[in-house]
Amino acid sequence: MVAVMALPPRHVSEEHYGWLLIPPRPDVSEYDEDHVLTEYIWRHFSRFLTAAEARVGLYTEALDREAATRIKGKAFADWLDETHGPVTMLELEHELKGGRCALFRRARDRILRDHSAEVFINRCPACGWIVRSPGARQCLWCLHDWHNGEGGGEARGPEGRG
Ligand SMILES: [Zn+2]
Image 1 (cartoon, rainbow, N blue to C red):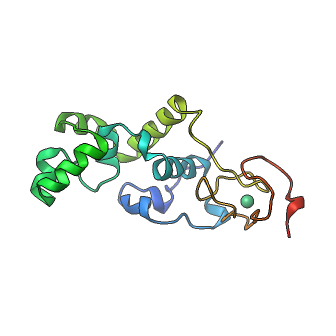
Image 2 (image 1 turned 90 degrees about the vertical axis):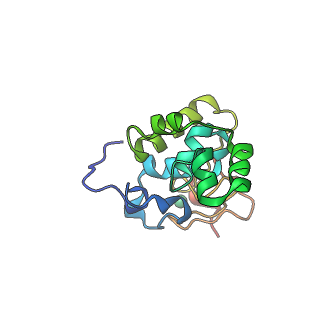
């Protein structure tokens, strides 16, 4: 895809890391496969993130055990270790070297490569763009709805509409 990258979309800018919590804007002009795919993978397949990827990418601070304990206490630090696995600050710093956007893309590409059998990219049968979630049956981009029958994920014409 050839894209003119004057300004990154708001929801994935370095300044606004809260994009993981914000629904993508259903504005066709903002559809960017690269960004939409990144968000989709991080949102729905975070179980495939490494401990270091998860602990810098999913939180606003790089959380090794010491930082987690300081900020939210031992129970939170234990929960992080159990949920994502333990990490060292060195591993966290390594992940952040190229910036958060680079981390988001790198992890996305690794997950797509290593877990291709388990990752389902749900595409609108009408427009072919990636929809909100693996189980979604409505497209936020073109507003096509396939709740009645039509299988998602395959590129198909909009004949089932209505
Ligand atoms: Zn669509």
